[in-house]
Structures are given as structure tokens and as C-alpha cells.
Amino acid sequence: MVYLLKTELEKNQQLLFALKSIYGIGHAQSFILCKKLGISKNYKVHELLVEQTNELCKILSGSGQNFTSNLKKLHILTFKKLISIKTYRGLRRLKGLPARGQRTHTNAKTAKRIK
Image (cartoon, rainbow, N blue to C red; front, side, top):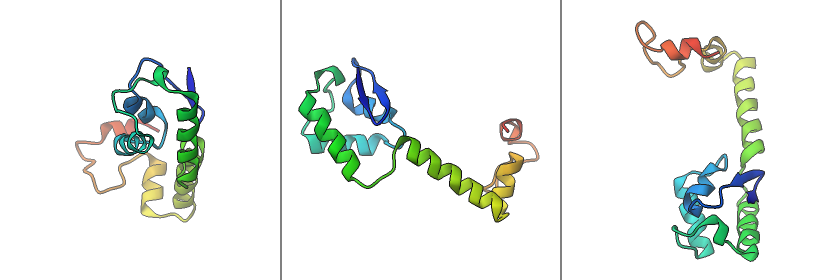
């Protein structure tokens, strides 16, 4: 098993798709990471060498972006700030209603249910 940023990557999965399982890394960024490492996108996780995993960790830590728990904390703090200053978005989120102008008369039943 390969653990990267507190996330377990499946060993039989391609590296391109395994990196997407890390919270905060999408398809485009995982493709860029594979290019920086000089690895094919068909490369499997269990084929990674120790040096390559260390290099990947260095690239991710040096990028200055937030991943996993830091990113989740940032999202939570953003929504708490919106609620505390009583913005429209914050109040709609607190009530569990759509905040971006969607129709609620006939739609948004799932948004009303999830609280």
C-alpha cells in the first residue's frame, strides 16, 4: 500500500486515477504531476519506486496548495464565516436550501432534505 498525504492509494490502479482519490487533486492536476515525474499515465501505483514517491511528496508539499484535512478545514471556516456575517449564501446554506438562484418551487427537493 502506498500512503500519500494521509490517503491510501490502491496498488492496482493507474497512478493518474489514484492521485484523484486525494482530496484536492483533480484530473488535470494529477496529469500535470505525472508529467513532472516523467511517468506514463498508464503506470500502476505498485510499480512506483521509493524515490518516485518521495519526489511526488516533495512536489506536492512545495506547490503551496492545500490538500486533504487543511482544505477541508478551509472550506468549513469559509462557510462558518458566511454564516456568522449573515450573508445570503450563508443563511441559505444554514437552512439547507440552494444558494445560487435555483428554483425551489418544484425542484431542490434533495437540497431541502439534506441538512
